[in-house]
Length: 463
Ligand SMILES: *Cc1c(COP(=O)(O)O)cnc(C)c1O
Image (cartoon, rainbow, N blue to C red):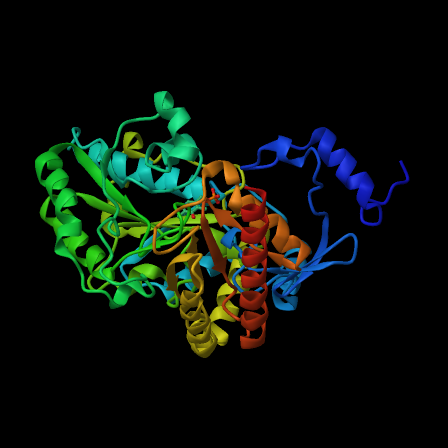
């Protein structure tokens, strides 16, 4: 066993093919195609074992907020390693968690005073759901046990998160395992007035989009514990963007009906939507419980926080039976805390995302220009997220069939062009780091269009 896995690409591929089971992956797709062996990364670029480089246009599943292998975050983790790697977080605390609380407090509205650590987006959502549920149990409103969700929601893959998820391809099969939730149409599910969505915040808010929500809340207020939302953008269902006013109105309705609001900032937190948190963009929208994960550690380590206010916290404060009996082995892991503290410090010192708004707007401009292509069915953007729907023909609203696997083909071609371009169904999206440059945006968009055009050509000639 003298194999050096960093040098021997084929060795890694062989071992991977024999033993690995990749996430969200039909493993048979890799029978004749090798997974890419990434050996290192810097900034927005990934490097493979063959010496190729790739623009990571999806920020490694939306986690990396200021690029890979930032010297400052590296140094913070190395320094932390010399002190302590981990200690259980019940009965003990440590300065690194204290620093996380202070840092989070400094970028959040004052009302958020309590921070519960877990490991990733899904666990942060489990915590949020159980917290909301038990809140009502603890204060004696025992019938409030149900949740309201959007039909296309995505909140993670554990069972609670799956039960408030509505993306059929991920969730449907597990239906018999799930608890029932009230499902209402997502806010953007109304006919678009303009040809393209672009920046959904510029559309007129349509009060009708809230009608179903109002109905469910009013009719079932007695049994509803909380409503859960992805603020402004539903990521995994295809980067669907909606109007901030929806959230403002939602909060009013929730307050009127004594229902908690859980805000899933897992994909939107830490600057990705152009503000530190997406919920800030909606007036008078202060969710009761907020889940953050992905960007929290700059994409370095799995760590999440479910944060809430003193009112929720105090419902658990008292006798033994009102305890929140939930926790994970790696709660407040010091290495992850160090990464989070370094990340937040950089965002603050560099005034990100605001200080890079010129590049952000340039990105939007480049996306708008894509309207010239007939294969672009819609264009949407919010902060450093952008997405287009790929269609066969815009005028006829003709879609590629699912069997075409157009998204997978675009992804594979993108790799040949030094780019990681992932698709959600027929939606191609970009999720850029907050410090992306105009030069990088040009390269990314130019190459993306080349890849999409070529792929559509290949698919069309085959049919
Ligand atoms: C990714 C995601 C999750 C789940 O996070 P994991 O870290 O993958 O468990 C939850 N909610 C939203 C909105 C997400 O995008």
